[in-house]
View 1: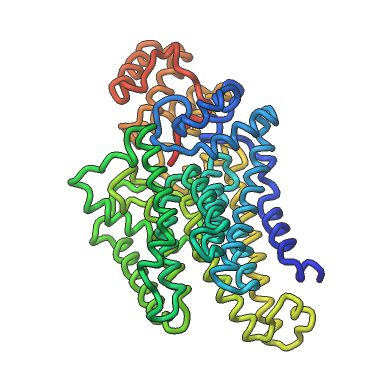
View 2 (view 1 turned 45 degrees about the vertical axis):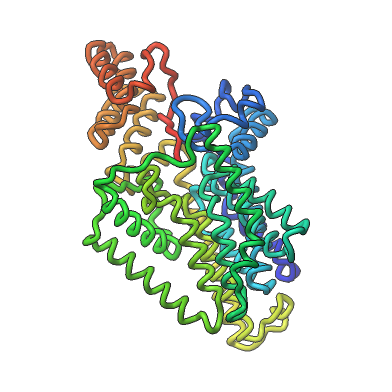
Length: 503
């Protein structure tokens, strides 16, 4: 019973149990691109690590995440590149992010019970397995950690000239430098300014004055990106496809809402081709869900403004990683839900605390005296939900145990994924099963004729098999597909997983 009186122990225990198997996992997918003995992480100078594009080696990705790069470099140099250390630190960062959310929730929800319930819901949510069990997924984890710290410190600051405001700015800067979607932080803080005020008490001038330092910091970050990469965002998509892209983005947001509530089945690679249209049932369903949530938040406004704040948090944090915006790739991944899921955790904490109060459980110590059926039932339901999240998270992390399991699972859940076929090709190639590897590379080429990676891999495998005419033909095809990234086969470095830098 002592642990119940100390929710910190419960949170750390549940989070550690949920990801207990992760430290024993192998490096998979992009991990093998970053974390090898000759990588820039292991030998690059501090100046290069801080100023380099996230890809570090090879074609530029356009992503700038020096905070995450430095964590990987420090771990690589202290541990000699041990996968167990990288995986263990991912779990530690996840626990830190959950505690940072508790810190922010203490200010936003103004209830310790609600704040701790939010942290517990967050730490065992099964949708987080990709971000935590995959070393390269830590970008979202670390960005969310600093994002929540910034929210909590900002809400704690009573005035602009406050040490708490300086802390909020420092955490915000670290969030910006961990992953690009964190740039929506000022907008989330504005939503908090609007929803925290009593009716008719909100003053835009006061909010603007408080937000000014954060907006200046954001401007400085965007200027830094401009100086380093010549742009602050990716290229604009094809104008003729913008309508379908927008429809696809709305459908993706609807799917994200579903995954937050029902995170099954796991899918490491969602294929969004062909794009959705406005007549698609997925898009219509997403629009209906979003309208319903907006109506519910508006109806609850007179009683509580938290639902409106959480809806704003979810939408603002999910937009930068969705196809709704006309920049960047048309992509969907569960790791993009790491920060948006904090909104669901806040709602869960708020609703759970209300249910406990209604059952007479106003503090953690009241659990010892609970005897009424309603109190026992309420506590049992919350405990069962947390334990179910724990068990399901343990089950889902197994997909990331090794490369073969990951790509086999990916191929089963997403049969049109060329990345799954390409990854399996590398698994077979490592084993010396060259014919099986070549078959998978050809399947990847069929699924995505514009991808150069499987063509390059097939050319190399055919060269090893003595099929030199075919190898030369595919080498030339790869050069045509991606002339900037192409180098002669003899100079082409081999990645055992065909890694590509993910957003």
